Image (cartoon, one colour):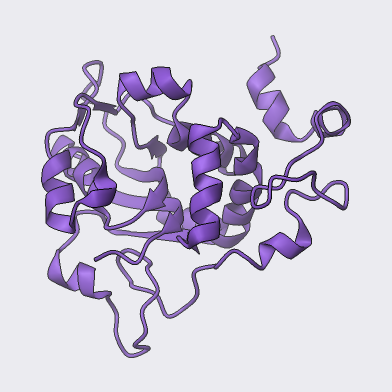
Length: 248
């Protein structure tokens, strides 16, 4: 039996889908030209790729080429090994991520996943992770949106890299306050009891995983997930995100 969802993401269905539903740009929302592209050539310039030098822990841009870590990672030790993000979280990226999350524009992920594959494929091979673990959302939010954007992202990345997506490791058991108005310490406290191991988790815990999320800001969400996974016995924990904020 054909896996329709995977077939739609594979690219084989793209000519038909473009004919029936022309691809929209993840930045401006207009029909992409020229045909076959995933983003308007001019709109790419509005995005801000993360550039070296970067923090060796969280992958955030740093100004000091002699430094190794950003101020946040120096102040607050992290449980995960390291991570990386594709873009700086500027206003253009914020609007695009909001369209994916709140307006169900999941097709925008196709461009970001293609770019992440080009940027991070070699690094992912070195990490040798056994599973991609999307950050879970609360069941009430999944009902509201109809999907988990981190899970959608992980599934597309899995198509490129062949690493299985594990949605049975973590659950979000508590609906937390919105993170955007909280400081780093408050954010982590807000999330400390939000995540847990899935009740069906057996003794077979993957040795290394990559946590997948759409946005890394202060890192509180990834840190909260990492602590649960580390406690469960995961030895190596990495993360990948589309966007990374400046933190506080």
